[in-house]
Length: 317
Length: 86
Image (cartoon, rainbow over all chains, first blue to last red; front, side, top):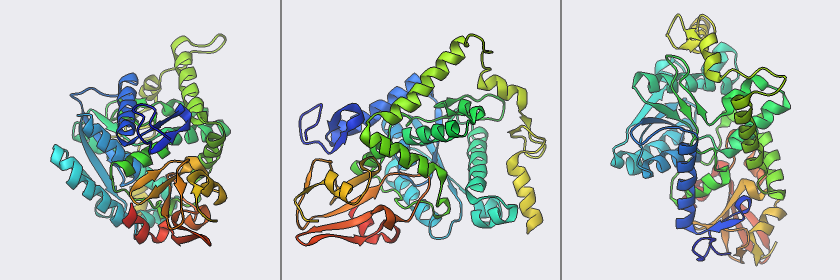
């Protein structure tokens, strides 16, 4: 199998594009797809300061790598969750990448340690507040990434969500008719109210397989093992179902997610006959959010979910 | 199973979905059409993130191709060998 562009031996085939690429052409493909996503979804410009959420996994490290290689000012934040046998390893991967790739390009790695600020590791915290570990983790990460982006004046926060993540999330939302979550599936979420950072997903055009291949081909040393707390995740089930469909019918994930984005844009642009034109997410946020009484971050209640959780954790100790 | 065998066929015989895995020989990616021969050791690396099931159940890890068949040498959950190859 030869490279579609330069006809040398290919190292990866992409059935959804009816193409195959050698190492250099595949790297160019990943960079081009990311650059197109950034421009098309109006994510950020060449002078903006970007905060990348990194975990030590392939997607977030590949994102940091691509943004730096495209010449963007991209720093990163790693949240150390204190998961025995896992967090130390993922932290080591992030530090190694920062030392070998990011810091030589002038980038900064911020680290937030849950044990230090929240007073316990993620498992103990989730037990104290009687919530699933993944929900506790999500609350802490969303809060700390947003807080760092806002307090340190970053223009935008970038996450490594890829095509598979977005297609699986869409499938989950549609299967359960959670229409209220569909607005949040855009690759660019605006800084709708004071205290919220703009959030973007520059890898939404690339599949997990493509990003894993990018990491291998560019010698990005990432943590292959999954988080031990995430066993039995529904998201994994949706991804596996979509991958079976994708293998038999290449392009399924792309058509599913991009078809949704096209319809969403059409609906929000024109409004449908007989239906009220949907409010934009920013308008909805402005109508429902106000500062948390404790920390000042935007919330729908009097106290945000993070502060509520921390208060419950203190009582439980 | 014996070599020579296409990477695609190896994944199929292990009941693994092509879209969810990479096949790595040494530090090189192997395309679906590439032939694996007797004596090859390949890493089958899962690409899905966002949750996990037991790696053994998904055939992930380091595999050896031989005249008498294919053998799992190491899984990713115990992965010093697989990581060294990556």
